[in-house]
Image 1 (cartoon, rainbow, N blue to C red):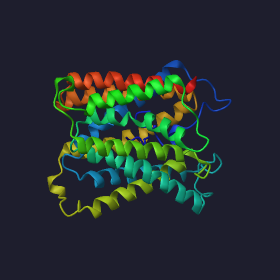
Image 2: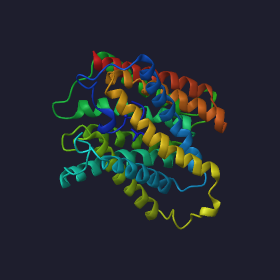
Image 3: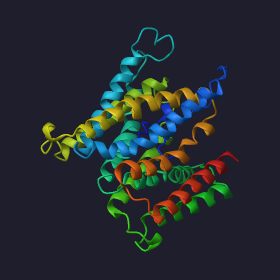
Image 4: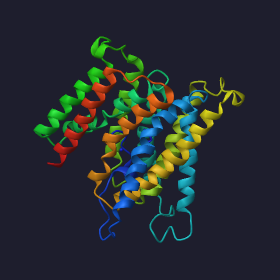
Length: 330
């Protein structure tokens, strides 16, 4: 989960990243630009799972994630202070205390609980498998929307997708005999699934009009709040006491920098640009691609095994996401 990313879907982003349709009256972008933006989101957000694994090899999980979002949030906030930002309704001058509080709540759900579960879970579960567990977010979204008062009853296609998604999760984390492979660590899997539920709740709340009007301002505040909670979690669990800068590897530092620059900023920028040029449904196709990218990179660069269980679960879960997406549009 980036994300914020990242956020938003396999790893659904906050309102600032996830909501919306093409901007009314926006000029059409050339096809090559659209495809470039899509592949940036496909590859960058899919690669963040492996980058997290490399980063937490020698960096404390919560402090790593917290500082990542604090730096990215500060950079975004600095962008909102550039000359002319207020005229484009991207400045921070109109921020109210209520908006800050609401964005902080969303940031806590998305980044502290959602992304925090991912970085903690990757200590026990391979990064590719984590990406497949995060793919449960669309399942949570449908169930939450159905459960609320006045909620929308899912279509037959969506129900079929929900059942298919549960089957995929059972294949992935079920008994070791399924698929002829060793089972996945249950504790790590449960934490990641809990984090995906929190991400789904945060994504729903992030559509509220109580958030800052500017997507960039909203995301900056969410990142800063989520990063602060993550750092607080790291301090509370004693990560700083066991941390030694001398023991941090170059690979972990490079991975942390990649998460800041690409996972949080480049991916975010590409996603925002795409939402202004093409339909949200087309942009949401990253939900099908990210797990495949994550599983492949985990195998190619970190020697994570691709077992019959993983392949079967990936196929079933991606199919479930496609069915849910198609059913919700019908």
